[in-house]
Image (cartoon, rainbow, N blue to C red; front, top):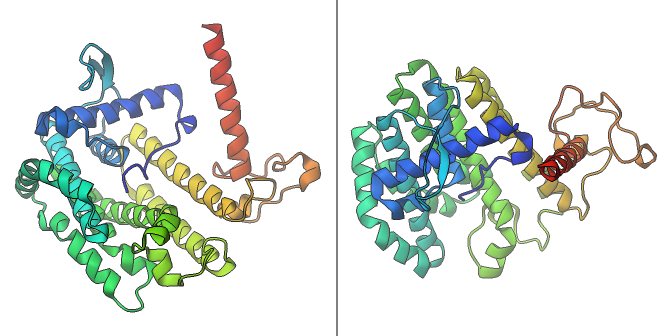
Length: 352
């Protein structure tokens, strides 16, 4: 679950990359202030998205200061700050989300590791629930997740959207509350829509990534429940296309919600890069299901270049000039761009 909302660094400029990492470190510092150094170990890129969104709602420009690292105090790192009360909310939401995920893991496969970690987290989780209540968000949104998820999984004929609904509702409520505590009533519904979209994506993407392991260990998997027990679900044309369309539709809803939000320019860029990264991941994963890598003509596989015309193999394996001029999510063009950026970075490092 955690780590699904990580941005591909190669998409970011050097300045934005430093600011993005500073927001990760800012989340880590907020976690330490909330529950001590052990709590800072729960910091993850998914919750960093929440910090970036809050900074965007506060209309911060991505600037940061140098402070001591929480793990290595002798090391100075960039730390982006948000309002103290907002940082407390982000930290509390992070702890409560981790607790909900651990409870779900205990229910799924009786994980001893999850049970042990949950016991260690108990006092901080209760503090997180109190903080969320003080901020106007009912902790039941988090506490009820395993129960609601189990009820959805027991529902006969449940669709992928219905199975993802508990996760979508949790992130939707959390994002909407972020707008409210930032006194941005104009952004509440768009934030809720963005949270629901990202929550749906994380749930479905987990199902895609964990399908083989879930089948091997006999655990519940949404894709297997909806499409049956076929040996190769992701390679089967019917399920493969339906899953791809569901993920793309979810990301399109996120695009629309983000377009309606008035955030700082920095936060808007970071969120746009996040959605682009997720779209690349979907395109490459679906192509891998067919046992091959991205190549010419794969614009359609990325579901983002409708009407694009690409040469065949004789063109050298990429799109016609201008084919993706208005699009930044073509698999084959993205691969080449990423290689160019990494080569440039190696050349710059060699001159230092």
